Amino acid sequence: MKAVHFGAGNIGRGFVGLLLHEGGYELVFSDVAAPLVDAINRVSRYTVHEVGEGGRDTVVTGFKAINSAEHPDKVIDEIAVANVVTTAVGPTILKFVAPHIVAGLALRDPSSPPLQIMACENAINATDLLRDEIRALAGDAWDAISSRAVFANTAVDRIVPAQPEGAGVDVTVEPFFEWAIERPPFGDDPPNIPGAHFVDDLAPYIERKLFTVNTGHAATAYFGAQAGVEAIDGALADPSIASRVEAALEETSALLEAKHGLDAASLADYRATILGRFRNKALPDTVWRVGRQPLRKLSRHERFVGPAAEAAERGLEVDALVAAMGAALGFDDTEDAQSVDLQRMLREQDAASFTASVTGLEPQHPLFPKVEAVVAARQAELGV
Image 1 (spheres, one colour):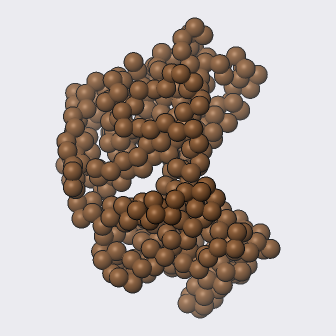
Image 2 (cartoon, helix red, strand yellow):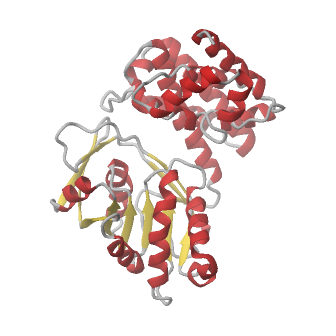
Image 3 (spheres, rainbow, N blue to C red):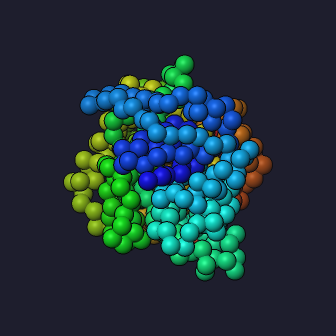
């Protein structure tokens, strides 16, 4: 069995690639970073180090890497005979992956089992986004090649910290992971991925992860930066920051309970698990790394505005989530392009225009005035 994985970075090697290896797949990593591709091809094995309680080391073998910028034909040939294609490249990069998959599907033997495609990204229904890109590129050929693939959405979760100096292609990760995959697209032939679990309805798993892990991580970063704390675990060691993060996650849990019927006690346990992961001192991380790209994180369907908008529409509490958005507005990192743009836009636009353009909320939405108020407060701090 063969799996082609786009994105040979830490998540690709330390999570997705690791589980595919444990499922018996020969791994083909595709990436555009020439030094990384060369480093992978110089070794015959790498080790995934789990740090923290219950951690273990796992050796990965049976892999190679291809530079898709220099040798797209080689990637296409591998896709044509693969069983599985996965990605961990970021949602905005999927459009650059799609042409390779289209070409690979066109070369695929029609009698072969369908190629099983899963985009493992921090986005809701990322595989649907990839499929839409593939369909658009295929044009009139879509009907012919669509029968050669199945597309399944996934929800993935594993913290991969900044890597130790000199680690090479070894990867340090936390012991916890979750990979939930839609079951129906595969029929009776799901991929063999030990540790993954297949579910009939993925939406609750995706939103539970995004609105707890992603919301909580970013909230910790922004409250921490606001307080002048450097480390994520250090931010949560401050009781005032921890209480504000917990309050934001209580609001997202209330939405998940109302929307998906998830059990309140189970959600409380899940929140505690997530915050415990962020406090893992063996996973050092900074508020500046986690908080980067604040404009994306404040957009309409992301970790703050997404759940807060749905909660407001249901008449649920959103004040703690709005407070986290207010902290995000103060994120000022000259090394991060979106942070620079955020601070510039706050100075150039009035509060209503900024709220509409950044969050995508309509002025009549019940969340709009609350967000507009924290925007105005941040502008007052800036002397706008």
